[in-house]
Length: 318
Image (cartoon, rainbow, N blue to C red; front, side, top):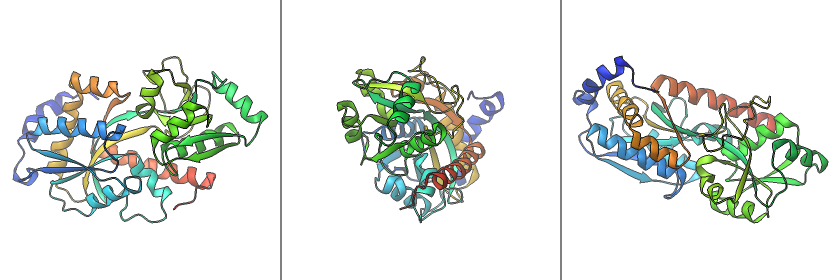
């Protein structure tokens, strides 16, 4: 989203905001996944870019556990004074259906600041598999119901929800095979031990570029820039919720609005920089700015959509 004339005019004043919106010590940005993964890469890019924009030290902290619940809980309980931020993915919304109880409410315990990037979910198979299109896969699945499985990085995540929307939309019987993380799932799919995998572009871009994975269909509203010849489910006539990953920044609920707007506009300015866009593109992510109100609306919509998918698919909260 480009910076409008109005936002460009107000950005300098927001960057020089009053003391209420100016932290007095380094800002911590927590992220709920281990170092080295796609969320970690985009999170560190965001933290570094924000630090450059606002001239305030930002300490990026990995706090993995429970599909990002531990990091989100720590931020939800932190003082709402601008010194603690959460770098989140859409697991924040999906966890509302994946867990029976959460120590926070994803729609009320945070002050959404900005969504910064997205990466679509894709159905992949290993290159040793015979399918080259979704139609070929559907024909195989219907000829052998219950025999094909798809890997995901765990229960209640992008891959699991994406697989269930696919199964429901196409009326096919494929089994979910959850793994503890991306790497072991990818290894089994590449080796042919598991035929299929639901994985975001940002998580599969490396093996795809090495010709170890074949894309069959893209979830979400648009084709992936890296996969211009691969259709979306929407193009093929199937309307399903977008299970692609989004990345964004939030603060504890009650954080002063001047600080929220200051950081939101700074992130918007960061995403306009060619170097930021190039770094995101290198990891198959697309800049996708949403301001506080639109980001909050997206989170609410996702919580509702995934609750409906979970109910229809019989996904049981842990």
